[in-house]
Length: 79
Image (cartoon, rainbow, N blue to C red; front, side, top):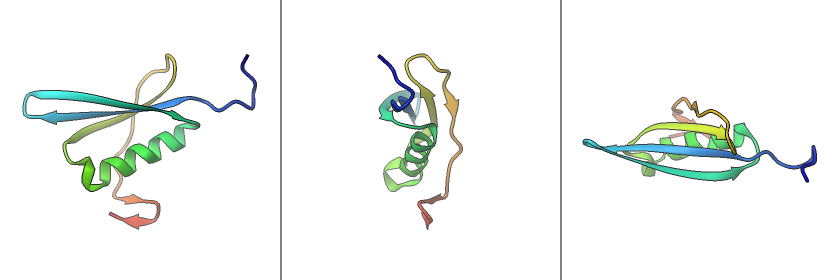
């Protein structure tokens, strides 16, 4: 049974490219869209984000994928 107090369930999708190959990875369990976007932007702009071509978020289970803009700042720290 869902209540209005229950957290939303948002997922982040990372699309990586390596030449002609493309791979996807998805992490879910974020309580808000903002949390999911923040995580996606910070991961994308970190050293581990090399090779990520696009980041998208969506509300599970069937929300549409929405693009996330790249960030050069994460948590007030310039990356």
